[in-house]
Amino acid sequence: ILNIDKRKVDFNEYSISKSAFLGFVVDSHFVEKFGILENKENLKYQSIVTIYKTKIDTITLLEKLDIHINYTQILDKTTILLKPDDFDTLKEKAPYLIAMAVEDISTLAKEDFIFENNTEMFSIPEPKNEPTIGVIDTYFDESVYFSNWVDFIPKVSQDIEIVPDDYLHGTAVSSIIVDGSSINPDLDDGCGRFQVRHFGVATNSGFSSFSILKAIDEIIRDNRDIKVWNLSLGSSLEINPNFISPEAAILDKIQFENDVIFVIAGTNKDSGKSERMRIGAPADSINSIVVNSVNRKKEPATYSREGIVLSFFNKPDISYFGGDTGELIRVCTPTGEQLISGTSFAAPWIARKVAYLIEILGLSREVAKALIIDSATGWSINQASSSLIGHGVVPQRIENVVKTDDSEIKFIISGISEKYDTYTHNIPVPVHNDKHPFIAKATLCYFPNCSRNQGVDYTNTELDVYLGRVNQTTIKSINKNIQSIDNIHYLHESSARKLFRKWDNTKHVVEIHEDNAKPKKAYNNGLWGVSVKTKERLERRDGEGIKFGLIVTLKELNGINRIEEFIQQCSLRGWLVNKVDVINQLEIYNKAQEIIVFDEDL
Image (cartoon, rainbow, N blue to C red; front, side, top):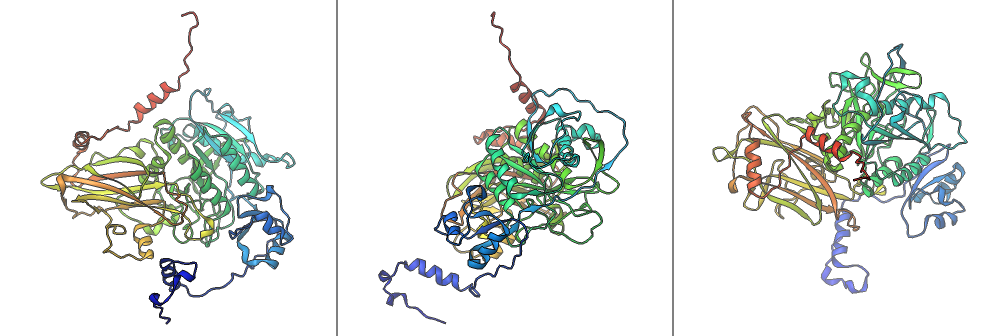
């Protein structure tokens, strides 16, 4: 043990402050050893390589090692595409620069198409003013009955031959987004039909992840009118447990920088494979909604692959019906109606719901994501199945996503984190006999900037949420969160992660509904409060101006409907209360989309 008396050290002689020196000493206490990671990757194909950040430009740095690349091989400042020989040179001359490397050539997680001899011909009216969902997939066949609803843009190089199988997957995915409820009447979700802008970026036999990532970045930049994107492409390979895939990292970056949201399939195991298998890229995207499949009994599908990501982040986020043995989904393909199962066909149903919430109901993507996840949760916690079904199974009907039982009060708070603490202590939860006869749950979602080089410390911004009764100026949070209450409570980082999901961009807290649950004492005239505290991991202030969506649900313990009392009290305290009415919002949307023709003679 080395004892240092800081009073005897002249810090003016060194380029370090006392506080920084103290921080280094404290941090070093937790370091077991130093070393250089030995890279043993033997990659046969061109590879996506991430190097550690240095003060030297990447091209200049590699040229010093006799590795010559051009700008087309650069994804971002530290991620590059290298040929096998160049990767071997990097390993030989500077292995310490390699943070992570994966082969660029991927094969799709397969689905088994089963042809059904069905002579029934589907028909569909011409599109009008329906919202558009973006689809990034294999090719789309423009001979199908709903082709007028799809704007197809091919993105695969003309040097690559396109064969009939390259149209199957993409056409089937778009058929669900456009007309899923008509093809599968028993799965009617109440969302109607959607138009599709379909980008063909891959073939059925395999694809270059690097090329797709470059294409996606360009696609999003050139199609800013589309807010919801369905991505049912997934790698057959498992994700690396130690770092986020480059595919997921670029999607997280796109969502941080743009007002868009990706709905991603959770990928599948091969049919007949029984052993456990981790999800494949890009299903490890933290900002996206990742969807796994369940059967009709809401049990994980036989082909389900598992999270979690980086030993911490809950992926998949949610699950939905994607077909399974003996209960397949109908889709339309170039060869006619077919039966199919897979997470690729669970994701489009969720993309439809997200687009409905954003485009029809006018909600933000943060609120839409929070509503989808919150609708899948109940009043209990089932941690055992989270790695397979996420937070739960989303209801089939869209109205069941936004509405609640008569005994529940659900309200939405959306905001922007401008300061360290964004809060209100002015929520008038109904009081009966000087007590609140409620239990509560809440779901918070936001889209942070992320740093792949940080490993498990992937998200740069933390929004720490507190919800509960206000006692004087303190919120008694329903999950007993004490991270930032005062300086008295001390909490280890590991405990904060485990108990309060610190650094997770999706947080769900719930008071368990027990038969003997009792009303709580009401403080301060029955007021509740919400506080969202912003914390930064790095010095870039990525969290400034970050948007969030918070869904709060109050359940009356005696089953009494107190919603009108709650609305009245909110109005008296100056809240502007807007009810989310699906039918009214649909009428408003249709009116807003009408084309007005002016008579020049008037």
